[in-house]
Length: 148
Image (tube, helix red, strand yellow):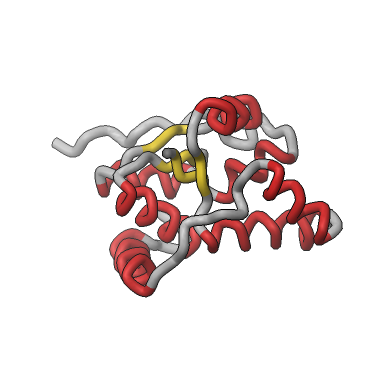
């Protein structure tokens, strides 16, 4: 299984640079979102893109992503601690939803697919497996240099 962050699904639905990579994951792997990821994708599609609510929900259903990983109190607590350890408004602007996805991946012992550089850095520092996707501009994240 691979946990997708919301951006991965949005990139696929909007034909952004990561769309091909996400399509391959959708076709060859068992993929999932967290319940918060579902909310994030729907919010983006409806509020920002202007997609009809039913169409946005149907898009996720057709991808098999409505049966999401639940966000338990324990998962919420670990995600809150993760964000508290790493968040900085200018150096590491990682969202709570992203931290929930990262901790969901860790708890499932599965990788997280994302292109978010801050989230990828947090996962790298925390030894959470990742599938690195192309960013909106086509760039690919690389790990920070090891500290000496």
